[in-house]
Length: 301
View (cartoon, one colour):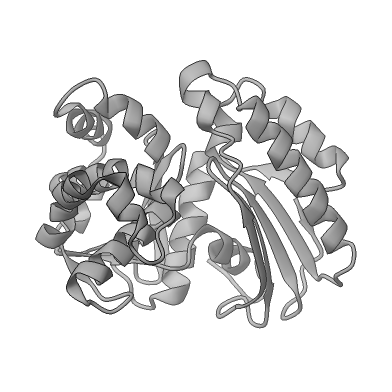
C-alpha cells in the first residue's frame, strides 16, 4: 500500500525481509534517490520457515519491536510516500497473515509482495543504477532467489525460487551436487534465463555484496567493477577454505553474513554454470530503489 505519491519529496520504504527489517528514507528524484536515513535490524524472521514452516517466534518479537520503533520515528518525519513491503519469509510462512495483521495494527500499511513483484522491483533497481544494463538481475535474500531478464531499459520475464541462503544451506546438507541439480531442475522449463548467456549477471542482496567485499579484499578490485565469471565461481572454494571466522575478519563482513557466505557463493557458482554470463556485477541498488522507480509519477513502462 502507498501513502501519497509525491514527486521529489521524502519517500520512506520499510522492507521486511527474511534476514533483516530495514527502513530507508529517500529524497530527491526517484530515478537517482539520495539516502537520507538508513536503519536495519537483523531479525532473521525466516529462520523457522525452512525447518517448521512458520516465522521464528523470537524473530517476530524483534521484528514487531523494531517496526513499532520505525512507526514512531516516521510519525515525526514529513513524508510524501510510505511503502511497507514484506517478502519471502512472510509469503511462505503459515503464520504470515497473522504477522501482517500485527504489523498493520502498528499503523504501517504493510503489503505482501509476490515473488514476481519482488523480482521486477529489484530488476528496476538495477536498471536505475546501471543504465543500458543487459542480462539477468538476481536478487538473493534469506528465503528466496529472484531472477529477471533486463535489456532495452525494460524488465522482461521474472521468476522467484525458494533458494534464499537459508533454504540453500538445507539443500547443500543433502549432499554434494544437490544444489546445482535443484537449480537446474527449476530453470529447465524456462528458456529466457539462458538468453542472457555471454551477457552480465547483476547481483542484488546483502550476501552477494559481502562476497564482493571479499573479492575486493583479496584482489584489490574496485567496488562495482565487473568480476569475470570464472573468478566469481572460484569464490565458492575460497569461502569454504577460509571458514566463517576468517571471513568475519574481512573488513565490511559481519559474523552473521560470514556464516552464510559459503552458501551464497555455492549458489552463485551454480547460477553462473547454468546461465553462462561473461561477468557478474554486484549492484548496490535493488528492491527499495526499484519500488521508487516503479511507483514514481514520472515513470512509465
